[in-house]
Image 1: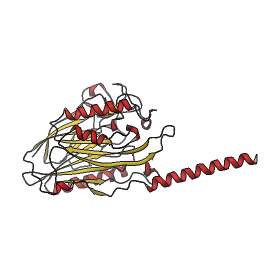
Image 2: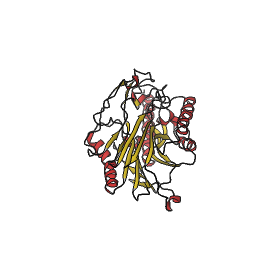
Image 3: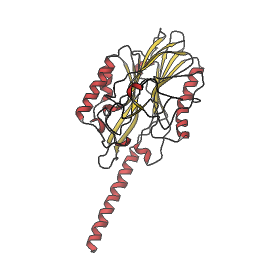
Image 4: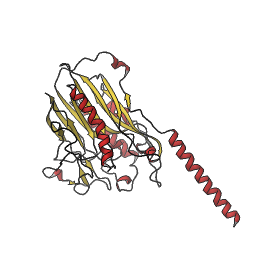
Amino acid sequence: MKKFFKIVGYIILAAVIIFVGFVAYITLTDYRPAKVINLTPKENSSVVEPLDKDTFNFMTWNVGYAGLGSEMDFFYDGGHRVRTTKKMVEKHIAGIKHFVTSHDSVDFWFIQEVDLHSHRSYYFNEVKAISKAKKGSHALFAKNYDCPFVPVPVYDPLGRVKSGLMTFTDYPFKEAVRYAYPLIAVWPNKLFLLDRCFILTRFPLANGKDLVIMNTHNSAYVYDSLQRVKELNILKSKMLEEYNKGNYVIAGGDWNANPPNFKPAGNYAGDRFVPTKVRMSPKTFPATWHWAYDATAPTNRQNYKSFVRGENGTTNIDYFILSPNVKLLRVKTIDLNFKDSDHNPVFMKVVLK
């Protein structure tokens, strides 16, 4: 009996040592980005020719790391699966690339959840794949998730994750900066969560002002209103600062919240609307600022099961915010039936007043 308890003791001790060692390793290798990181390449240090136009097309799309297509359910949203098959990831990457190449009239792309080197997407370099699809473009990547090993779920860990946001355009830019959002959790939970951020990109205009665009991916699964407000205020203060300088300001991306007072229009493309637990307040921005979204079709679906139109809950969390000197001409959700991502892309056309 003593021998048995001795063996059990060794096993428990070994488990404790392994656990402590794992936590120590993750802590030491934790991604700790600075609050402000310059993304501008050295070649952009020269004078950039101002843009002599006033009408622009935008597209924002959370591509779900090519791993959350219509066939997928996801454990974090109440499903059972951790990742789709390698074949499906390849198919989704091809679909994303085709979508990019078939919309060559888009001036500015905001892409979220692009994997650089992750177990969940079979270590495909999606940043490189999408950059190649948009040949001749100026591509920016800002990392917002870098963890050597995510240990959940225990039965099939998510493993290595390295991912982020991409902004790309045909136009040369004067400045590109990664701005960090505050952490949404404390140690040790923060070791395994995203370090969220937004990308600010600046384009000089022929009228002497700047077009300042911001690609954002705000926190999900955070229902602490004070925490969300703190995160939004970082973006809001930068937007107001640029507008007060006389510049044109546009922010877009995955906000993980419905726009203020959002209600679906028409038959909502035949989908079932489920509001987000947290909605944007109408007071988030001054009344003269404009929320640009399409209420006739959803931009995001629930992932507790593979997608079936009319059964999965859907909602709108992908859209744009425009400063008062930017006029909205058109905004349209491009309904792809969530074929290659659990988000649909959103197109927008604007003119600078």
